[in-house]
Length: 109
Image (cartoon, rainbow, N blue to C red; front, side, top):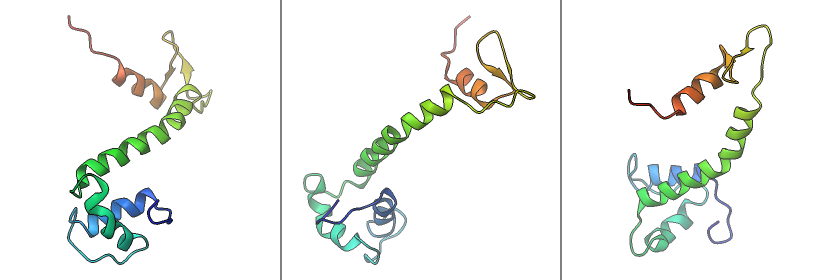
């Protein structure tokens, strides 16, 4: 929120991409961009800090999507004709099995 105006993740990213030089420098021409332009120098000290702000924004998105991801991984849609529960407790031929395998720490032999 800036100056009483709600901002979406998309608006903030587009601002840094199209006004502050992430893709190109330009004039603010979308909702909220004028307000962001006036506030950008004070958002993080006396710098625009685009990368730092986008990093924080990325963490907000990850935090917001983590419960959805966890829900999908703990209760995946299973098609009994295609997916069989294996000894490891995962479903053969299901993308979640590959996902869990990639997340397991590698053992050194």
